[in-house]
Length: 82
Image 1: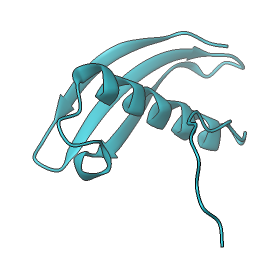
Image 2: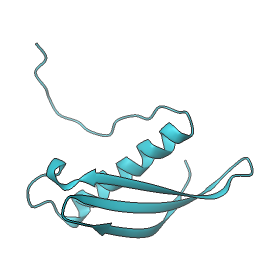
Image 3: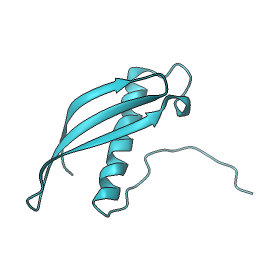
Image 4: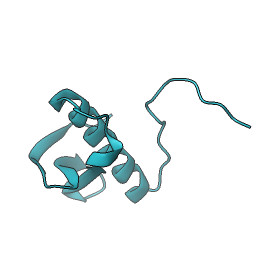
């Protein structure tokens, strides 16, 4: 597992954003990943901590896609499947 450094975090009227810098292997050097989530997808009145979790997951998923890997989904609960 790599550690990343938060470069910036912000939101506008529709989305929240997080930029994370990761020192990658293979000569890639430092790579910045920009993750975002739609505010409408977050629970109403989401706390900063809830936004952070969602944004970190967005960055992880983006990094995994760009590096050609799959990533585990980090959520739990029950759903009805018909």
